[in-house]
Length: 295
View 1 (cartoon, rainbow, N blue to C red):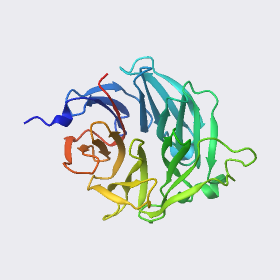
View 2: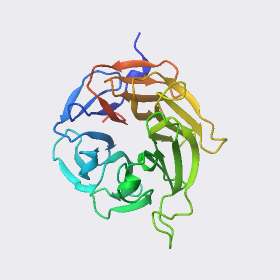
View 3: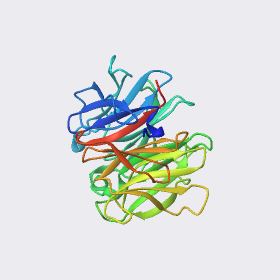
View 4: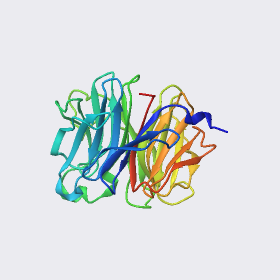
């Protein structure tokens, strides 16, 4: 019997090991390599309406040579929108089509940043540390990012050291306040703390539920979790046992999530984590993933 979840949509995935972007149907079929030669790519975002893929290149983390690129959906017309060194170690991206903005977390840069979709007007919205001393403290590293365009808020993760249990999810206004700097904002809220290693974030805006991947040790680590953002902010583990899960994409209309792991697998499940199945395996070392309706 054919799984009804496999009938629509296209996935775009980053393979860090091979430095490539590939796409495939949401049932795992019809895999195609679109872009090669990426410098340790970490996350990607798809703008179906404009016909673009955006992705972050971490580069060599201690060299401050991160970048962000853009290409057509078929991989053509590739170009930098944030040149090498324009960001330190860019991690997860989030595209806000309403405002025409691209947001990202800059890990060793200890920042949350954004720019116009053409790479102009680069801004630092959050700064969590300054200088080499702070840079060596993983609790200052910003990793995941998502946006609530309805209420005008950004959400991001600070993972902390491996298996330290110091991971946090934070929130602030989408725009800077007059007066405070990115390092002294009074509107920053810590929503959840004591997490194993929260990485990528995704927001189900329709149901006001925040999802995230978490590295680290079981039972709460190496999982996908969620919380009702307007409720008690309790972590609910909905999916377990990816092999170092990183990327996360939601198809809310189709009641599906997609998860990648560093062992090279892509998983599909309902949003409550049920009916988990592997739709691809041995694909390299997978990081970012994005879902687009049938193109």
